[in-house]
Image 1 (cartoon, rainbow, N blue to C red):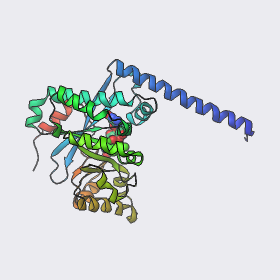
Image 2: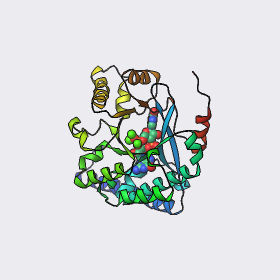
Image 3: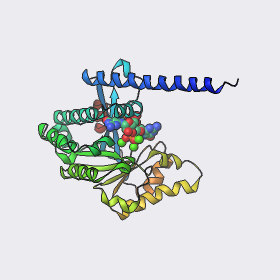
Image 4: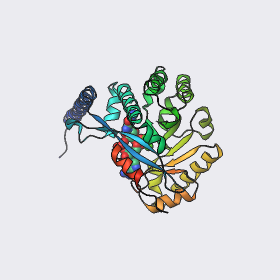
Length: 281
Ligand code: C2E
Ligand code: CA
Ligand code: CA
Ligand code: CA
């Protein structure tokens, strides 16, 4: 049934306030979870495309608390950004990754492993951020060459002079930078050299397209791979779910792969069990 304009406005209004209420509730739960130390870390293996040996792992945040249980980081991270909790989250993830590395130092020396930590776009406007990372590197005596940080390509849209300084400062600590979700942000390729990045992580949406019959969408991956090669940037294809996708990207020179075909995100112990598996040849 048709409703009057007035009624429709009311319904719209209710939905908006429901949504705000939901986001406020989630923000409160995130604050509580941080205070009570209820988050955990998962590790999603990243493999060399050529021989499928494990190169490293992307660190992914998980809510351990009962109240946030069914809410993933794709929901609570944007809310944490909106409610100014994200800086605490980023530092929590960095510090707890470093603690884990410190506790497993000898193991990691024997089983070399890169750790890819996701960083919010907010940090590109935070000139204290590199100093905070530096303090934590020293506190836990972490070799910076074991660490990579991922920033989304879209966060570069709002990048200014300070952002370039922040990225250079992180790079100068010895930490490598990757551009996450690459291909979604429309960075002009000739602008790429402004940023001290070593690696492009090709967004899952382009990998998804490889299963479609639409040839023009497939050319995007080819274009990204050849530009990356020209600029000497490493490449990771994200979201590989089937053999066809793996064959397509590896045959076209993609350096690394990540996705459910190989492994889902794992807790630390499961990751070490995976590393202990004999390599089939
Ligand atoms: P992202 O950085 O693009 O992370 C990749 C996401 O894609 C992860 O979801 C991962 O589990 C998922 N994924 C990887 N391969 C596949 C695949 O083959 N198939 C499918 N269906 N999914 C795949 P997750 O863990 O839910 O993370 C979602 C987003 O939340 C991340 O996207 C990232 O933007 C954010 N995030 C997660 N952890 C952190 C963190 O510690 N700090 C910050 N700032 N953001 C985080
Ligand atoms: Ca990422
Ligand atoms: Ca990504
Ligand atoms: Ca993403």
